[in-house]
Image (cartoon, rainbow, N blue to C red):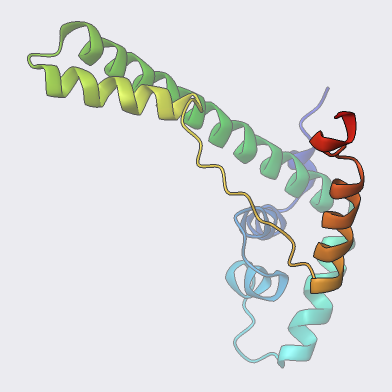
Length: 146
């Protein structure tokens, strides 16, 4: 498969890289082209035209996907480093406090300790009375058997 970025001019490629990095279309256009004397509306129109170019759109998408893959790989690497370090501290920590703290942090990283908050929906007096009546109706009096 041929590298389609070769079909782009250097300025178009620079524009695509700016967009993929998170700049707005207009800011990307200003960065890649000489737009000092252009009106903001004209910059917006030209930037939109560039973004409508199929090869630029594909290049932006490829660059964004590559950036996402890089971020995921970095996050996985960081996570592995944290696990490795914490496991070493649990196994070889100098003091009980270090071992305990490392074990706690390791547990938190794998989701062992989660704060659970129970949120009850407020009920009206009538709803509470109806629920109590329902519960009381299901209870047989102890004296009914005697």
